[in-house]
Length: 196
Image (cartoon, rainbow, N blue to C red; front, side):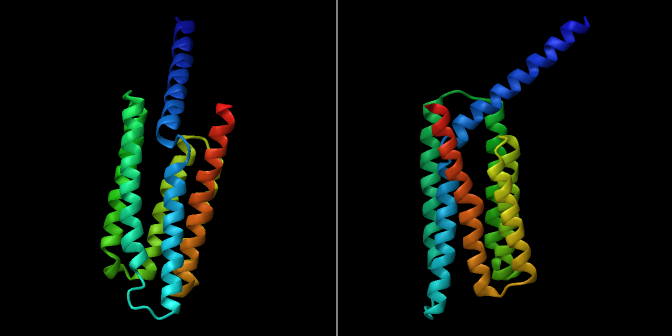
């Protein structure tokens, strides 16, 4: 009886590990989403920084154009990936539910920027990005995401306690590129190496 329980426990761990690997393949596949969002957020922050330095009135235009564009690209890309995979996996559904909760929370924060103040709103977004990247890193046992979370959290502390608005934009760009884009790129290299 004890041997049967032990076999069931080991079998359960094997099934869970396989589910996580399948989710890795279907959701994170090549790090595309992380690279896309890290690049677009970094570009939007740097563009706003530059436009503000040049005194352009609509300095926020990068956010208004790049973020919806990134959302559309992500939706199309992930829909195609899901159709290709075909399988419905419980772990994948859980992961996508967490992603949906993250995106809704992000939308609420962005919508509430005027109440939070733009500087602090960006700090809250880095906290939220850190949470999402940390969850991704722990679920998929991919340390660069955990380090990316730490970078985003450190950036949020600098925004809240040290920097002015201009430096906040540079902090957001740095956190997006080092904490989001770079781990996505490293994931892409890791996936390519394993597929060889």
